[in-house]
Amino acid sequence: MNMQNPEKLIRASVRRMQGYTPGEQPTDPAVIKLNTNENPYPPSPRVREALLAAAADTWRLYPDPLCRALRRAIADLHQCAPEQVFVGNGSDEILALCATVFVENDGAIGFFDPSYSLYPVLAQIRDVAIRPSALNADFDWPDPDPLAADLFWLTNPNAPSGRLYDPAQVADFCRQARGVVAIDEAYVDFSRTNCMPLALTLPNVLVLRSLSKSYSLAGLRAGYAVGPVALIDAFYKVKDSYNVNRLTQAAARAAILDQACMRANVEKIQHTRQRLAAALAGLNFKVWPSEANFLWVRPPAPGAARLYELLKERGILVRYFSGARTGSNLRISIGTDAQTDRLLAEITAMG
Image 1 (cartoon, one colour):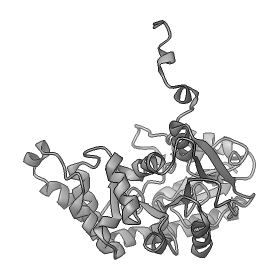
Image 2 (cartoon, helix red, strand yellow):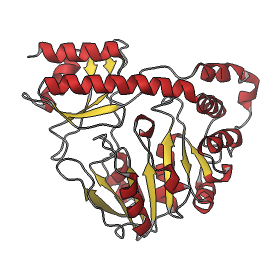
Image 3 (cartoon, one colour):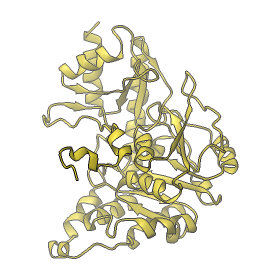
């Protein structure tokens, strides 16, 4: 065997892949991070209490592989059975499991374009056909083909636009879909409505939620899916043995049980979102209506790419996605009021 080129040992589809590019993670604490949609406020005080109560002596023991206590709390929140809940190492793990469980080798995966940039990467990992459904110029509902894919990832509110799609419209698509529709509701707590009822009534629908955004637990990696028992059971056949660690399970349960804290943080972010949107519109930005914890905006001259660089030079990170569909825009996470004031001051000073 010729071992001169180790790359030849890698699967061809993986060699061809670009891979997912996460947002920048600066090491300088002075940098204002408005690029990865993290919550600027701390989680519930109950999270800290739960972590302190998790005695170090228990760390030598494996965590509950079924996340039973956490699943019961989530089931109570959504008024369903624990058997309808799956907990993952962030919702990203559940997205990957969807690609593993619901798509044959000759199958296809669909999603909106643009949307979460991890979706095409996960499809490429599986080496299956990709069926993107292009959003229109205003990033509105594109009327996707319900028969085009065995699995359709539908982000609502969508990213990076922040647009919320009508649950009735989504329901109509789900009823016609030939395969599983995984409704990715990572940002739904910041919106006016949600599609959870579809996961509890339709046989082919899952709703995915994340604790990274509204619950301020991005660093602990917890997400969950709710849906039909048959679909949820399939995840348990293929997941890692102990996919959610002991501390994350305890913290996530504490956060779920403190809905008042989560809602208070969400309301602050919604208020700041409204204020930032109005201020940027007054600075001649085109601002899309957002139901998430970020804004999708199109800056005036000198344009998105240049403004991204100028802000970065001034210690403020926002998210820039190059490309024909997204290269004219920036995605700006909603920070604290003080961070927002600083952002607006820097943009105004640039003239």
